[in-house]
Amino acid sequence: MPSNKEIKEYVKSKYGFSPKNAWIAHAKEHYGISVKRAHNRKSTKRLWPCPKKRLVEFKEIFEHFGIL
Image 1 (tube, rainbow, N blue to C red):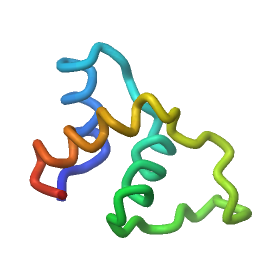
Image 2 (cartoon, rainbow, N blue to C red):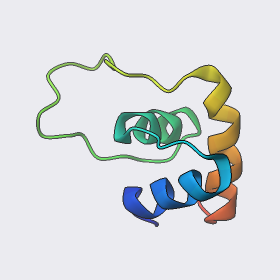
Image 3 (cartoon, one colour):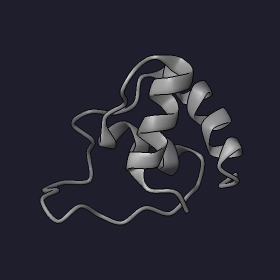
């Protein structure tokens, strides 16, 4: 599985924006990919969920890396 850093670099080069780690984790959860719980996370509610328009892009990104 690629690291968040590798995903960020790919997103920056292909789509021209830098996603937050929280967006990547939320998108993974959205598509049923297991993620580890952050040590500093206090609740189950996400403070920075991935914007809906970016979820479509993350699907292509995860397919590119062979995660989906």
